[in-house]
Each structure stands twice: as C-alpha cells, then as structure tokens.
Amino acid sequence: MRLALAVLASGRGSNLQAILDACARPEFPARVVVVVSDRERAPALERARAAGVEALWIDPKDFADREAFDAVLERELTARGVGLVCSAGFMRILSPVYVRAFAGRALNIHPSLLPSFPGLHAQRQALDHGAKVAGATVHFVDEGMDSGPIVLQAAVPVEPGDTEETLAARILVQEHRMYPEAIRLFAEGRLRIEGRRVIVTPEAGR
Ligand code: GAR
Image (cartoon, rainbow, N blue to C red):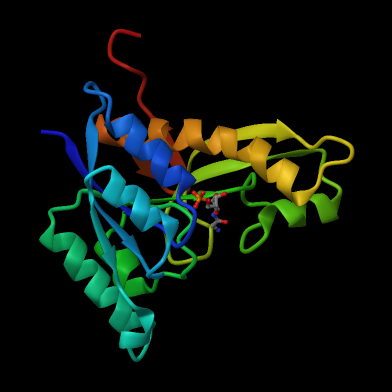
C-alpha cells in the first residue's frame, strides 16, 4: 500500500506540483490524498483539483484561535488516514496540538540552509547577510519555527547580482528535487530520528 500523504500549502504550490508529479510515477511509494489550504484562492488548490486530488480549504476566520483551527486540521487529516503531512509553503505556525498529533510524521521545506535564516523571506535574509552559499532544507516539524531535525539539505551558490527572485528560483530547483526524495525515504521506512539527527538508512543492496 502506498503511503497516504497530505500536503499543506498557502500559495503557488510549485512544491506541491513536484510532489504530485512524483506520485504520478507508478513506482513512487506515496500518493497525495488531500491538499489543504488556509487560502480559498490558493493556486495550490487548483493544482490539486487538476490532478484529481481532494482540495480542502479551511478558513482561519471560522476559528477563534490557532488551536481550534489546528484541531480541525488534525481531525480532517486523521479521518483520511494520512500517514505523512508535508507543509509546502504553508504560511501558518502550527500549534503543539498539531505537532504532537503528527510527531515524526510531518515534514516542512524551507528555502535556506537551516539553522540559518528561519522564518519569512529566507532568501532576502541570505542576501542581506552577504551569504555566499544558500540552499534549502527538508526537516521534521517540531514545536519551534523551522527548527526540527534535518532530513535533507542542498546548497546553491549566491551569484553576484542575485536578486531575491533569481536566488529563490535557483533554490526552488533544489526544493523540487529534494522534497519528493525525502518523501520517498520516509515512505520506504529509511528515516530514523535520533535526537536532533535523522539517520538515513541506505537502500537495500547498497
Ligand atoms: C518555497 O520556497 C518554500 O520553501 C517556502 O515557500 C515557498 C513556497 O513555494 N516556504 C517557506 O518559506 C516556509 N518558511 P511553492 O508554493 O511554489 O511551493
């Protein structure tokens, strides 16, 4: 049985698209069962519908606080038998209610080499800091912001004359490659969390 994935996305959904494309390959060990957004008009929801995947909008305005939103999110995901939740440009901080429910079963992607430049506008932070190398990180979600155990990272150079847009585009190429790879490793049972470290078991026969 292929692992049931949920993807949480607030915006454009290019990482979601990379995940959907990977899942369309017959040998890929996961499939997206639902895409959830906090924005009604998120292009990510359109991408889900176009791929024949359930698109679920949960309106934050319907809830008194973050915990109430997250409790419903947790219920919706659990009801669909989700085994792994992937945040992909989901611009909400998730509360401990959610984090505990999906501990060790929730991933996030962030456009920096964590622990450098967590939070918003990571690419701008890297440029403003004068970094020569930037990149992306896939990590398990914990109760901090962009702080959980690191699964995969990829580095890209910062080129002279880079703008936030050109750097973001270079990083995005790595994101689109790396997120499906992290999902595959998880689905194959090859990730083990030991404290801050994620141990990746080599492929059988290697
Ligand atoms: C991606 O670059 C992702 O790493 C970033 O938002 C973008 C979403 O793009 N996430 C964060 O900054 C989270 N802190 P997408 O909607 O096209 O996948």
